[in-house]
Amino acid sequence: MKVAQIGTGGWGKNHTRILSQLGVLSAVCDANKERSKEYAEKYSVSSYDSVDALLDSEKFDAAFICTPTSTHSQIATQLIQKKKNVFIEKPLTYHSEEGEDLLELAKKNNVLMTCGYIERFNPAVGLVKDYVKSKKYGELVMLEFHRENRMPLHIKDVGIIYDTSVHDIDTAMWLFDDTPQVVFARAGSIKHKYEDFATIMLGFKDNKVAIISSNWITPTRVRNFNAVCTEGIISADFISQGIRIETDKDTEIPRNEKQEPLLLEIQNFLGAIEGKNELRVKPEQAVNVTKIAEASLLSSQKGTPIYLELQ
Ligand SMILES: NC(=O)c1ccc[n+]([C@@H]2O[C@H](COP(=O)([O-])OP(=O)(O)OC[C@H]3O[C@@H](n4cnc5c(N)ncnc54)[C@H](O)[C@@H]3O)[C@@H](O)[C@H]2O)c1
Image (cartoon, rainbow, N blue to C red; front, side, top):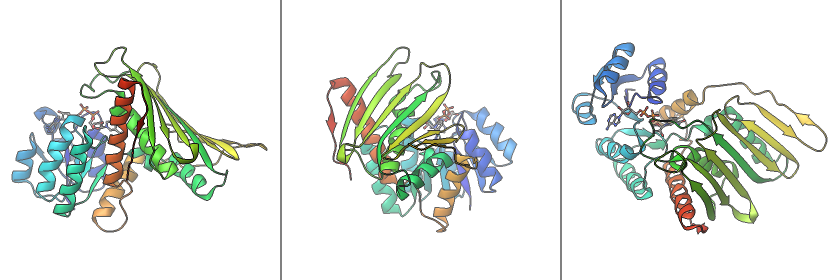
C-alpha cells in the first residue's frame, strides 16, 4: 500500500513518522515547501508543495489530510474524486454540509473516509467503553470532561469548540453509544479571535448527560473525564491513560498497558482499506460531531438549547 501525508505541521509530522515506520509512506505534501522537503528527505520519499502536483505525479492508495480545518473539505474532495481513500484530521469539515457532501462523494467513488477522533483509540477510553458495555459498574448516567491548555497560537481558523471540544463530543457519543437530543452551551473569548472557553451540555435520552468543559486559559495541560455509573465512578486521564474507580466498597486502579493512540488509529484505517477490520470512526459519526459543534456555537450565541435529530 502507498500512502501520502498532506500537511506536515505540528500534528502531521507524527502521522509522517508512523506511516514511515509502518513502511507505507510514499510522499509528503505541504504548502510550506521547506517543511515538505525536510520530511521527504528525513523519510526518503517524494516531496510536493501542492495537492495538484501530488495527484499529477504520484501513484498512491490513501492520503492523510492534516491541514487546517478550513482546508479539509476542498483537499478531501480533490482526493476522493481521484478515488483515494482519505483519513481527514478532526474536525472532518468546518460546515456539516461539506461533510455530508464528502460522504456522498466517498460513497459514489467507492473509497473509505474516516476522521481523526483519536480518543477512541486511547486505551483508557477503551477500558471505560468495556466497563460501560458490560455494565461492570452499572449503568452509565453522566460524563464530565475537562480539556484545558494554554492557547495554541497557530490555530487561527477555528475556536476551541471545533479544535478541542470535538474530541469530547465524539467520546461522549462513543461511550453512550447514542447521539444527543439537545445541546446547550456557553462560550466566550478572552484572547482568541474565536471562542477560547466553552462549556457544553449534551442531553441524551433518559436524562443522561455529558458536560464538556474546555478552555485555552489554564496554563497546564489537563485532559480527563469522569464516568458516573450507578454503582461506581470511573475517573480516567487521557494523557497518563490511568484509570481509578471508586465504589461503595473500595478504590480500584486497574492495570492498563500504555499505547500510542495515533499508531492504533492509523493501523485501523490501513487495516480497513485492506479489508482486515472495520473502520472504527464512521464518517457519518464525524459529520454528527460537526453538527453538534455547530449547535454548540449557535446555542452559545442565542443563549438557548438547540434540539437535534441526528441519525
Ligand atoms: N487528533 C489530534 O489529536 C490532533 C492534534 C492536533 C491537530 N489535529 C488536527 O490536525 C490538523 C492540522 O493541525 P496542526 O496542529 O498540525 O496545524 P499546523 O498549522 O501545525 O500544520 C498544518 C500544515 O498544513 C500545511 N498546509 C496548509 N494548507 C495546505 C494545503 N492546502 N496543502 C498542503 N499543505 C497545507 C501548512 O503549511 C502546515 O505545515 C487540524 O485539522 C487539527 O485539528 C489533530
